[in-house]
Figure 1 (spheres, helix red, strand yellow):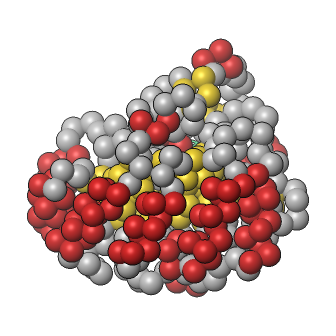
Figure 2: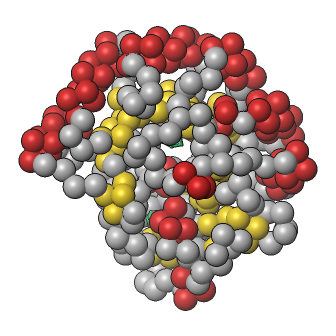
Length: 317
Ligand code: SF4
Ligand code: SF4
C-alpha cells in the first residue's frame, strides 16, 4: 500500500455560494484567518518532517483574498508540499489562470465542484477546459457534483456536457448529518447509471463504511480548520472526537500509529484515494509519482481504537 500524506485545510469559512445541500451550516460558513494566523499556518506547514499534500477547501478558498495573496505564494516559497484545492470555480478567469501559473510543478488535484443551483454546466465546463489547458501537466483535474434527491436528471444531462469536453464527472452521494440522503427507486436507478455497479473511490463518492479497517487518519492524514484545530478525519470531527491539538496554540500533534476505523461511514474519498485505509488502493495520479510513503510492513496488528482518540476536544467544543 502506498500512502500520500495529506492535510485537508479548511482555509476559510466564507463562500460566495449558498447551496441548499451544503454540509456546512450557514453559521460556520463565515470568516477567514487573519494575516498573523495565516503566518502561523505557514510556519506549521514549513516545519512538517516530510512532504504532504495540502488540500485546501472552504467555504470557497478563492473567495478569501488571502488565499491568492498570501497562502499560495507562502506555500510555494516556504514549503515543499504539493498543493491541491477544492473550488466551485467561480473566481474570475484571470485569478484562476494566475493560480495555474503559480502552482506549476507543485500542483496535485484541482477538484472543481459543479453546483447546478448557481451555474450552468456549459459555462462551468468552458472555464474548466480553459483551466485544464493552463494547469501543471502532472496535475489531476476532476469535476464533482452532489447527487441531490429528485434532481438527478439534471446531473445526467450535465455529465454529457462534462464528458464531451473530455472531463470526468465524479458524482457524490449527498450527506445529511452523520449519514447520507435517501433516494427514491427512480433516483437509485439514475445513480446506478451514473456511477456503475461497484464504483471505486476514485470514480464516485458513495460514503462507504470502512469500519474495522486499519486507517492512518490522524497519522498521515488530518483535517485542519480555519480556527487552527486539527482532527483525525471529518467523521471524527463530526462526532467531536479525534482532536489532535491546535496550530495557533502550538499543540497539534499527529498520532504515532494507525488504528481501526470506528465509524459507520467515511464521507470523503480523500483518505481512501490517498491510501490511508487498509485494503483500499490509493488512486494512481501522475503528481504522486515518487512522493508517496510505502508502508506495507508497518500495518499495525492492534485491533482496538485507543480511548484517547475518542475523546472530545477542540476550540469548537
Ligand atoms: S460552494 Fe461548497 S461551501 Fe459554498 S455553499 Fe456550495 S457546497 Fe457549501
Ligand atoms: S471515517 Fe474511518 S476510514 Fe474514513 S478517514 Fe475516518 S477513521 Fe479513516
